[in-house]
Length: 138
Length: 138
DNA sequence: GATGCAGTTGCAAACTTATGGCAATAAGGG
DNA sequence: CCCTTATTGCCATAAGTTTGCAACTGCATC
Image (tube, rainbow over the protein chains, first blue to last red):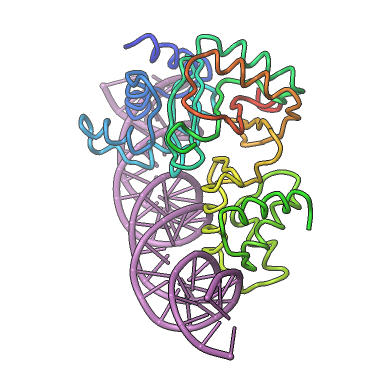
């Protein structure tokens, strides 16, 4: 099991969640992905190993992981993307064409600190997205 | 007509767009709203005055406004929210309960400058959203 | 190792948001 | 006032996500 998956399981064990096959597969797939995956992506990757796992289960599992703070959800035009909560990141989404890119967020802390100075955030930030016009659409 | 709506119409006039009733209503509703509205919100508010305006038209109009750089789109869990492009803002969205708040963004420029230092943004930022856990869900 | 409960899952159907086709309408120039 | 064409309304449809319910399985207990 990868480090990333191990970290997720640690949390799940803490809260007494069952170690089911479906959860193991979803976590494994998320841990193996460098970026974010949609529910359909996750389902597709799991299907190559175990086709009987239902898409509904993927939705329920990801929701569960997000609810437990193990994963996070990123709204995307047309679908939601999921990722494990172990590396800070910033996404840039173009208002016009929907193009998206992940920004290397080595200094995300600085950004969040700056954002925090704008006022009470009202939340513990885990991720960030920027909206605007990409170079092609300017 | 409000200032905000006037600004939008100025842009529309520049590009030679027709001053239709549906567009006027969508812009008026967006201009009157302090925050962001979903297509359904806009449609509902218009309906109280002019029920014959179709939801499809609201979608097409908002897409048009976003495409022209007059409005912007914010992905939200389950739906897209629209707002006019006349005041910089930062949104905070809770991963878990979906609670959202608009952060007074007097210093958004500083945040964006900081974000830009994280790497090539690949876009001209107009808005920003933060994802994480709100106080109630921590 | 067998048993029982509660948490999970699979399947099918329903819901919601959003889009596309096409005919009817209306804005704005002539 | 007429004409052209952008725009709209209505319908059908797509895609993503959720829900209801019966069946199943992890895990604690016996």
